[in-house]
Image 1 (tube, rainbow over the protein chains, first blue to last red):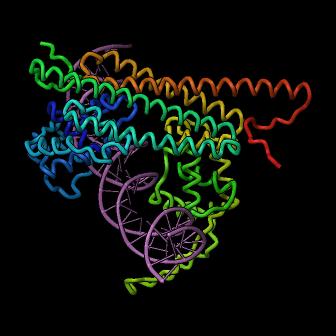
Image 2 (cartoon, protein in one colour; image 1 turned 60 degrees about the vertical axis):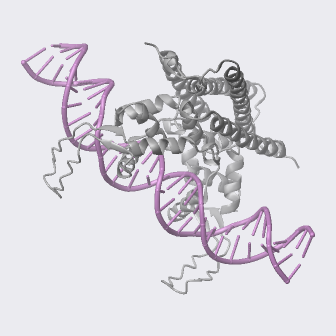
Image 3 (cartoon, chains in turn yellow, orange, purple, brown; image 1 turned 90 degrees about the horizontal axis):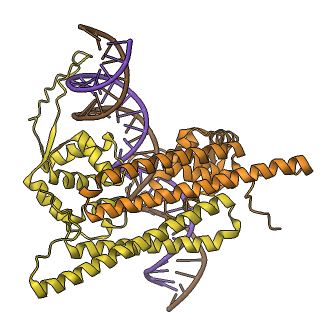
Length: 208
Length: 208
DNA sequence: CGTCGATGTATCGTTCCGATACATCGATCC
DNA sequence: GGATCGATGTATCGGAACGATACATCGACG
């Protein structure tokens, strides 16, 4: 999941790890942040795989068990996506399998980078997500109506609130799907009538 | 977090690991389930700490690198909470620090076992949770109004939906707190007027 | 009688998190 | 001038939880 998000952000511009973390929190809606204990290992993996490059060309002198103070020339590191990284990102961004929508976290990240995602893939992910959440909702409904009498009021409230949340998410997804369909239809119409380019919708208009 | 939930469930009756997992999923509202990769290590920890006991008295014969098929007499194991475990649970259930409400997952579990929690602790946890979520909401609002123009419509939708969810949670918590206060007042009144026992509210009425 | 789904125990490798240490730099305060 | 404080910044450690998987038993159903 992090792999996708990091490549997506670096795709826009090179960054420090610190900045990466802040952007990530912003994109995910502020609730879900990520910790350094995930970020730096992930960057290391991406670097090892050749998907990102650093400006500092590995000043990793061994110095084993040296002076305990260890004044270790801690320099700032700028991470840049490589050509292979961009390729990898476009490969990831065009996947629409269950892994893209079964996990809510990854789905959020996918949605945040929808502007790099083809229209048909967008639609498949949204519909997949809807089905997943609908199934959750049905399970929840069944469980609730089965055990309503045996639950104390706190557990009941918890489940009621959870069910309402899931319900709202389904409606939200339905709206997104609707808009997606309307846009694609309008785009087809325009394309046939006037030959407009099929620009992905929702792109922030460039402000010169 | 698991420690609390497991002890809470075993507090009601002894169970197999499998049953434990199902109950846990039910209590948490069906969305958040937990995997065996968490459950069995957690049970092992609790067993090592002396908080739960098993019926099978450890038939762990060494047999190192024996026959690869290894027909290993896999018996069912019933986990039972010990006296130390009950003590531990009551210790945990009376804590109202930030750890009880800063993490949403743990908060959910705490709420699910509110019927074992004293009224003042309940109130402190609910109010703490409300403050936490309110802070999240303010951060989200600020971030959204700051960056509204630069976001594409998908990210915007993501944040809008997130904000609405958080908003709903705040209102939900406010309702729970209100009820808590009303009940405690009513309870005081009843106690003074008629000497009713201070039974915790919301208990499922026993059906004989 | 076979096989299929539910019940059941358990581990492996991996991802991710929380806490923490260390370091630099600008602003603000006294 | 200098002290201190918060933001920026890199990094690791131990542990918690996950997803996938293997293995095993058993009742039901065709």
